[in-house]
Image: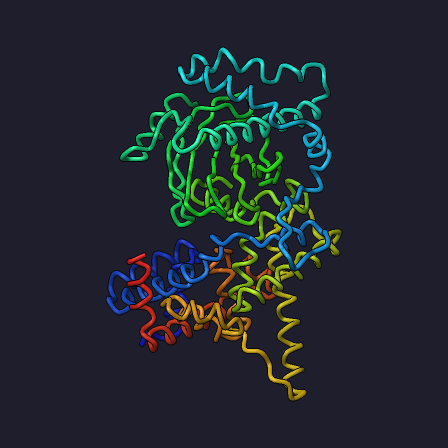
Length: 291
Length: 184
């Protein structure tokens, strides 16, 4: 068996915690000693198993009681089923609540009709979206823009849900789902990657071209037979706004979880509970390197 | 990558950051406490303590590390409390397997053997393993969370990895778990 000091060095080497000189020494040792190589492989394998054993927790929905506790509100043993608004966003949230989110539906419907023709149509319609923001202070404009974005995201979702199975999907995921992504990406400023949500029982059905934050974006559509979760949509677009952490919002019976990261905007939309949304968003962010 | 950015610990509101780090806190707590229910109780207590001590969080430091430290502190307090109760003649609850229904389900999974092996590690070694190997913290970051020198983290981690290796080899868990992982 390898001396303990040998294990210490191999573990630090695996963890990337050795300096260049020591790394070279260890690599020379590994080149010369097959037993050390076997030991390194075994240590790497056991480390991988430990990660596998606990990573599944990340896929679980976060219990609502924890989200409520994190907000500093009174916790309940019974799931309330109510969405929890962030305190820091209550001002914007209340403003949004006073609006009827479904006023965005005609906007969404119009956009769908116009965007079906492609990105040329997009540039002809986006100007009206932030038009009512002119003359307002920047912070108010930003809050209004956020509300409009989320109103539209909820509207897109409701349109899709009301259209039924397969309705309103511009590019259905027939055969290789990557083809649908490639097609929709042709109309977008950047390539869109497809998160695999099969572990959640969610199947990718196709994509639509929509508008998020005044720019063309992809709406990825997922469905599931699990009524506790689906259907869900994930909108991925580009953004010039600053990064924001994942934030919850609600438009009537639609829950939204949105965030921005390095020039990309994301909003996960569905009628599932916020615990599932958090878990799925975490999975999406991990897969897309989006936080 | 996770739903929290350690590089930008003061972005967003305090509660936003806490909610964003919840999945990782739950994973860390699950590794420490063993059962899902106990782990979530631990995370809930950590959230409540963090909010009560919000003023103690130093801007410019990593929020996730601060939360990990709170979880770890509460867990150690709980262990000590249990030890006292045990000395008083009460039977300490077995951490792993206290949630019997979950245990029965998980017993069918080969990876449960890995979780059990982790659960048998001494608390300080378990903490080092979860912070570095599972959550990917550097030795320096893990040392800050645990409140010990980097050398101590290295030592604990090394002992944990070697002990784990021996347990898994003895139980045949490595081969079975690897096969299961590949099959999945």
